[in-house]
Length: 375
Image (tube, rainbow, N blue to C red):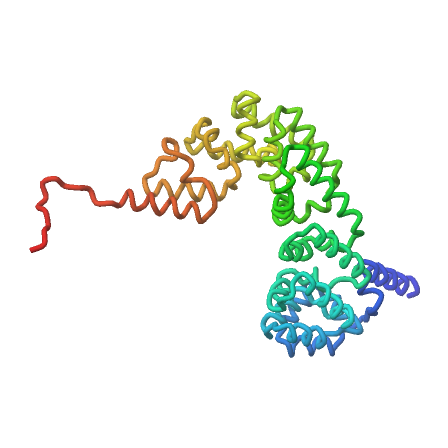
């Protein structure tokens, strides 16, 4: 019996230790559900069964502040439907102390004063808003730092929402990474007058860039320079890769480039040109590239067509298969025509397909048919 009790207590301690620090400090774990929390969630039309299945431990915590969370969101303009959806997706919100929530509200309104827009952000990124109070100082300092860079408030808001880790850590770490990006931009020939716009676009496209190391960026740029890319081409790649060049490493890029070169049968110069048009070749591993090349070749598409429109390799095999089938239904020979009609986003494909459909359905002119003229 003593052994069973000891084991039970150990498991419970492990479970508590796995919880976020701010939730462990101000709440305790019970073996039974907090009936007040359950009832208040029901009253708010929250899917309690979903909460039980995915994050049932929340229902065992005490105290909880379900009504306070609801009132805060309602005061910001959130509808009952939105409140219930936020709490179903992120029930941990009910464990945040009201003072923490109010502090977060004031903090976020520095960069997003429109409360309706803020509710929309919370709906998409609830975990970024309902966060630990011990991070408030770092968040405030990081907001001030990015404001000092004259970044657009919407960009800062997006960073806080989609990459909250970069705001909860010391501001000095972000300063080092931003400085590394700026130095790389200028060394590659970027104009200082355009640097703010470039940085804003980069951070907007890939907020997680801030969590990387300037040393990783330097190593990747040196590798690509050794492969023959000019400074201007490297700057182009940095911009077109949306910061993903920082998430790569020389070994993976070396393998992907070697596979592509051998498969296409091109020179180093031709390979660089393909990469400039389709930077995805740098970060797709060999197995994914092999799958995509093989699908295109089996469909009757030539290697010269792929070289002419290499961005088709950015599409998954499922998307390519679907589009090829639709084009064949309209009598389009993908092995003989341009791959541009196969390429691009879903919207672009539908537009190209629509034009193709009109062209194939146009009535054939009959030279011996009588002309219809108005009386």
